[in-house]
Image (tube, rainbow, N blue to C red; front, top):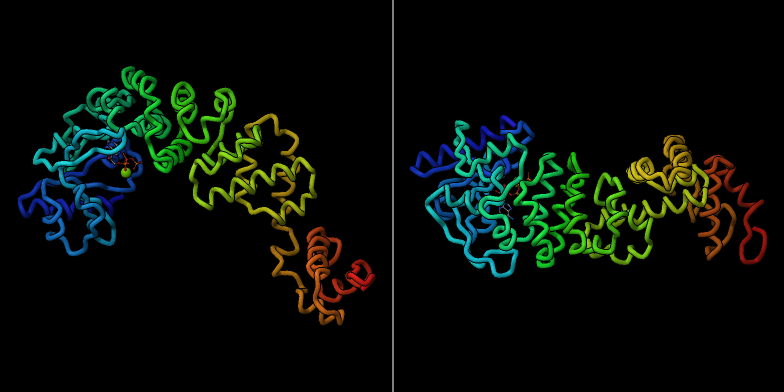
Length: 396
Ligand code: ATP
Ligand code: MG
């Protein structure tokens, strides 16, 4: 954290050295004041983008038209953004145009919540025209300006409000909460990916329950995937991640699976969800613990174990799951490549040509080895194959 602020100060120093202003701003100031870890340190300045580029050695143009340049300092990327005002919003998601301004206060006025609308000098003096520090103390999320106007401009802010509730364990101001209820329908204008990013942050927060209450009250029915979930099912699950929420809800209502793509999750998340659902099915089928241990990775066991812990309807599966997770470290092989035989060595040892039998044979061998019925030893495996496996023409 010290190296982050140290590098950030060098940027503000350089701006001030050339008679420009520069401030730390937004989430970093909020998190610094709350003594939470600061990951990205954003800087705001009255210098125009071309000037920012000219003042630093290493810069990346990520959105000059919107005023944002990335400045690399001590190998850390910083978003440096020119003081900016936003024009009208006609689509409830993006301003029709942005304008640069010379006044920090105007830049802060466009930001969503008072706790996100504070700036700090490089010596950590606070500039707080919208009283964000007072709201931090009251643990309150409240918009800069009229809530209904701000949500009408950009509907994503409603979801940002509830994700900050969960992350910070704050409550919404009365006006802000009312405006969420009133404008919930505007969420339909927001790109799914942006909603999903907010939801991922919501689920990783510390008070998901209160945030989910607000969502269930108003936003749920306007969100892809979530709109098919009943309010009760949604409120009853204590999912510890967006992936876990999807697994729980699909488990309860299989039909939901066909709506999963609507969440536009990463391929990784989609795989995790699919495997967790398979594992739940196999737990119900009471598949041997060793086979389960062999088929699923530790992170899937972890996810399903979190789900089972919080859902009484899955009580029975818990024991088998713990057993499978425990035997994972004792498995004779981790995957098929660790098997003492392969297709070629089997054909050679048996003096047979390849064919459909080979795949079945390898599969059977793998199963026997995982179950501990035969040792992972070439001679023993060949011997077992000779006595147990048939090819198309009968016994091998
Ligand atoms: P996090 O810690 O999750 O990054 P953050 O507050 O930094 O939280 P960002 O999305 O990184 O959130 O945005 C940086 C800042 O930009 C915010 O603190 C806020 O001042 C402003 N901001 C971001 N999104 C919006 C929005 N939709 N409407 C208005 N201001 C916004
Ligand atoms: Mg941020």
